[in-house]
Amino acid sequence: MNYYVLPGIGVYGGIKVGFQFARLLGEMGLPVAVATPRGMAPRWFGSDQPVVSREEIIAKVNGNDTLIFSLPHDYPVLKATGARLVFHCQGTDPLIDPVLRDKDVILLTCWSQAARYVNAVTGRESIEVGISISDVFFYDGTPKEERQAAYMPRRGEAIAEATMERVAHLRYLPIRESDEASCAAILKRCGYFLATAEAEWFGLPALEAMAAGCVVVSVPVLGGMEYLMDGDTARIAAPVELPTVLAGLSADDARGIRAMLRDKGVAMAGRYRIAAQRAKLRDAMQAGLRNVFSWN
Image 1 (cartoon, rainbow, N blue to C red):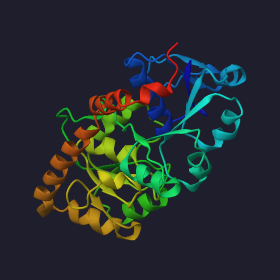
Image 2 (image 1 turned 45 degrees about the horizontal axis):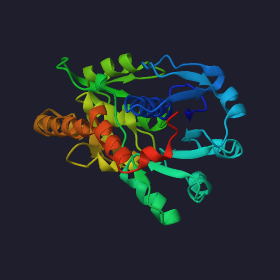
Image 3 (image 1 turned 60 degrees about the vertical axis):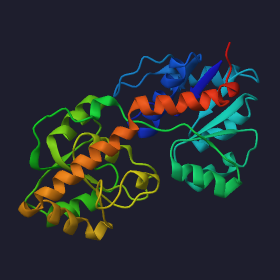
Image 4 (image 1 turned 180 degrees about the vertical axis):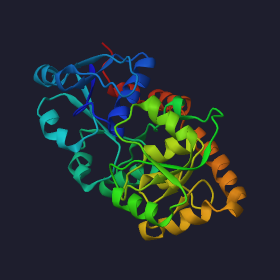
C-alpha cells in the first residue's frame, strides 16, 4: 500500500500540497491514503482522500509498502520502518540534504529551483511532478476594491506593518487562519497582495493571489521566482523598498501598469492549474514513476 505521511493538518501549504498530490495519484488508479496524526482530516480545504492514522501506519508498514513524505524531520522514523521511501521535495532547506543523499530514496521535485538544488547537492536527477493551486482561486469577475490590499501576517508581519505605515492611502486586510474558500473570496475582492515572507520556498499564497487577479508585490523568494517576474507578472522588492514600490503602483497614473501586471499574473497562474499538474504527473508515471509505488 502507499501512504503520504504528514506531520499534521494545520494551515500550511505543505499539508494542502500533500493532499493534492495524493489525490492526483489516486485519480491515476494508485491506491494511496494520507497518514495524519490520529487519522484526522483537515477542515480548511476540501478533500475526499482516504485518511488513516499515522501512528498505526508507521507501526505496521514493511518493505512491501511505499511511504511518501515531505518533512525532513520524518526521515529517521520512516527510514526505520523498512518501507520504500519517496521524498516529495517542497522546499530546499539544507535540512533535507541527508534525505537527498540517501540513494534508496526516490526524489520528486515540485518546481525547477528544487530540481536544481537536488542536482547540486547530490548530482542526481529528480523526477519533476509539478505543483498546482486550487481552481477556486481563479478570478471570476468579482468587482475589485482597488484601494484594498490583502496580506498574510503569519510570516513577515513587521514588513507588512512598515508598509502600511508608509502607504496609508490603502486599506489592508489580513488573511489569518482562513479556510481555502474564504481566502479565495478575499483575494478576488482585493486589488493588491503583499507577499512578505522572506526566504519563502515557493510561496503558494502569492501564486493564488495572482490567479485571483491581485497585483502582487513580493519580497524576493526562492522557488517562486519562476512565476514572480519583476515588472512582468508582479513587482519584487527588498523589504525596505516594498512601501515605495507599492506607493508607485497604487498611484492614479499607474492604472495601465496595474492592468498589465494583473493580466500577465492571471495568465502565469494558469500554468499552475490542477489540470496542468495532472498532465505532468501522468507523463512522469508513464516514464517510469509508476514502478516506484505499490499497486496492490
